[in-house]
Length: 126
Image 1 (cartoon, helix red, strand yellow):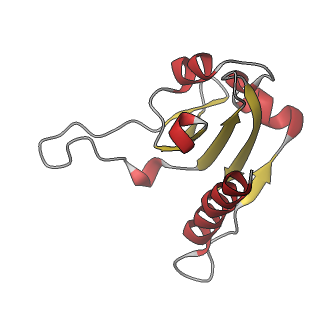
Image 2: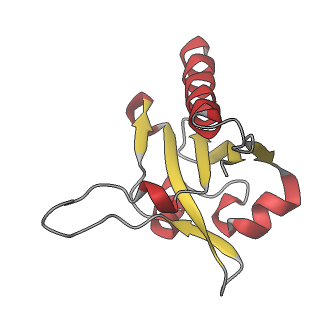
C-alpha cells in the first residue's frame, strides 16, 4: 500500500512538474473529478476491468506495479467531446515516440487485485 501511495504521488508530482515547467505564464495543472471526468473519459466507470480500459484508451504510456497502475496521456477530441489517447508518431525520424505537443491530460488509473478499476486521477496539464 505504501508503494502505491508513493507511485501515485510520483505520477502526480511529475504531472505537476511538467505543467509548471517553462515560463511563468504557463497555467497550473488542474485536477478533474467526478461527473466531469466520467463525461470526458467514459471508460472510467467504477468496476470496469483493466482490459476494458486498455481497449478504450489503448496502450498505456506508463505501467507500474506489474500493471496495477496504468498511466495514459490524453488530448481532447473536439468532435466527440471526450478525451482520446495521444497518438504515437510513426515517421522514420520519430518512430514510436509520443507526440508531446498534443498532450493535454494525464490519467492515472489504479486497479484492484481482481483487475477492476478502483480509482483514478485525471489532471489537465495545460
